Length: 358
Ligand code: ATP
Ligand code: MG
Ligand code: MG
Image (cartoon, rainbow, N blue to C red; front, side):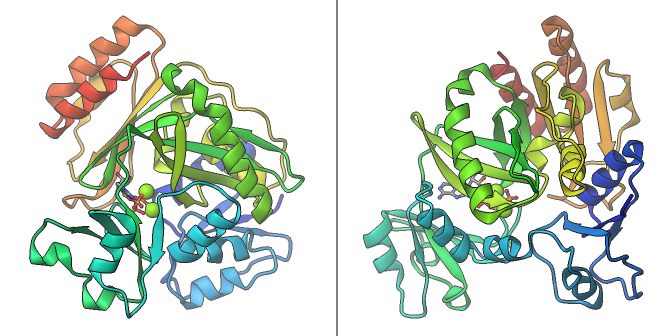
């Protein structure tokens, strides 16, 4: 069996490797700053766990290999301006936007997009980093485009969304596709904090979402798992952004589905049979953000802890907890047992989760 090389060696790479082991597939996540010369066989496969990477000896070796998958698609999606242009050309709805050029002023953006405008750097942003809000009635700082952002950002209209939902799909080289049910996502300070999936009240949006992501994956002739983050406005979905990889809002699939998103990606890129993932029961996921590991979490029945082994820093994702318990009373009991073991910000997140249970 061919070896799979992963550009990037963060938690997503580690979980891809973990998922591939029972399939008897060797996975080698690669840090972008590694300096060795890799022994990549002609029929090995190269995929990614991140959408941006610096040009280094390691990334050059991986991306120049003939079996580096999805190369042109990754380039097109990595820049928010070309990503938005692509979505526009496919008539896939997104937040109205402007490609910010040197001559643009905040006034022009307010005139075109409205009183609240979100500037997003064209590349490199994640967890809400690389964003700047412009507000017509705000402070001086909120009424001007930062000088260094000109030519390097897009501007988006502020969307008054009801909910943030995401769809994770997978596509095989032969064009076959499968999708997970929509997830709903709660963010805290720009970082994903909690996810629930499936959610009965979003089931009516599923076919709309699948048609959108299918159109995009087909247009890119994409192979592997791709994620579409959306804003729900009434019964309409607007794409917020596309992540051409496994995604934090799909971590629940490790506990709540017959096929995790990580195994799904491995299967797709390794050309192994693709099946519609079966959902076991409604699942919830909580990100562990800037918190220390607490072995007491393990005393809560039904919770599954994933610790990434990273240095704990404020605002940094260091692990996640999945809970997939079919019996409602047990789920509620486990959540209330977990709450005092978490910092106060999680009280709101757990309340949000409970509110969104079917
Ligand atoms: P990620 O960690 O998901 O990659 P990111 O830094 O790439 O995040 P976005 O997903 O584009 O950034 O935005 C982060 C969050 O900011 C969104 O999940 C949403 O809550 C909010 N947001 C983004 N765009 C808009 C918008 N046009 N209107 C209102 N809120 C927005
Ligand atoms: Mg992003
Ligand atoms: Mg996002």
